[in-house]
Length: 88
Image (cartoon, rainbow, N blue to C red; front, top):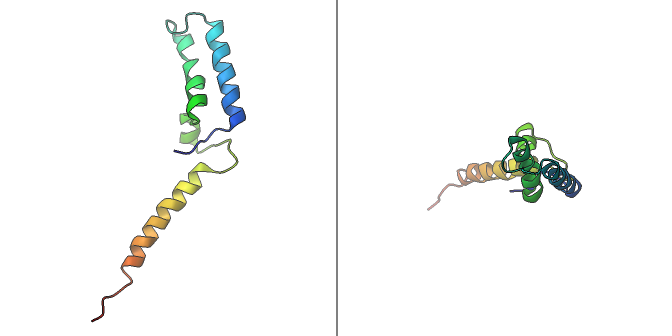
């Protein structure tokens, strides 16, 4: 899976997550502290589920069009296979 958040976005999310967890000391016991896990996990994985649902990205290359190109090229190869006829 390609990344949909940039390095800067990942670092910013990590800092915000750590800051949020530090402010709410018992972050695993409080639901507000558990929210701090989302920016930490997304910064570590490089993939944001919200960005994915909205087809947004902060990387230089669009991770969604490349996937669509790969799937469309796969369909084209199947169509091309039907063009060839066997001759005796």
